[in-house]
Length: 309
Ligand code: CP
Image (tube, rainbow, N blue to C red; front, top):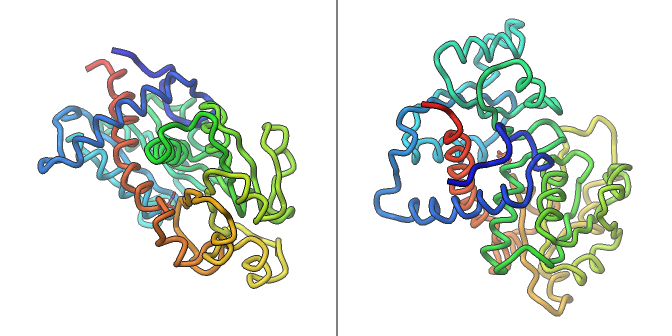
């Protein structure tokens, strides 16, 4: 059977196109499984997975947990707020203590960029990055591309605009890598203060005008304004942000095609997107969430295949 070229999933940057195709093909199978009356397979009965969340999460944490349960893995859940991290324990000590309980795979969300990469050099277990600071969120980017492929038949050749707070977003960077790997054209759109200086070096276009960006694209991936990561003011007022970069039905009605609308969640309704757009027929936001389970099952399954049992 084909195998992934990587031993851990730390970022999309480390994947090749064959990896992405293998993950999608495996996810196709698991999507069929989770739509059956009995949504579970015994594949990972001998695998134990620890979900370590050092930062808040709804979708990613529950999606991983459900994916692991659907694969029949044993799981333990850790959240930093209820742990001995609060007493000063280091990341490596925390994880090594968890691993001594015979854990095979670590799924980790961490506020620091590179936390998964750092850990992978110090521990002997597989690691899946569930989001590290403003760096990468590889499973989100894979489920996003998978959802585009499902909706439009392919990602290759599609025009995708990523809109909003790019500076504080791990979803943006992982999406840029994933979309380019599959042959999509990518632009970003948002206030100049929320665009990282290095971004054009990645080969993406920049469009400051939201209407022009929407006229150009097939897919608009709308990002949340991450107020909690802002230590200074990046735009004068939320009202001004909404006027210049908020997506609403009135604006979409001026575009003479049906753009696919995506959002990784959580949504600030009425800020980056209005409810009539988020809940419209053009929106695939809940399809993204559904596909997240199949994608995470595929990744866990493929990495577990590499473990000698
Ligand atoms: N999309 C995403 O990562 O959402 P959560 O922060 O709720 O996991």
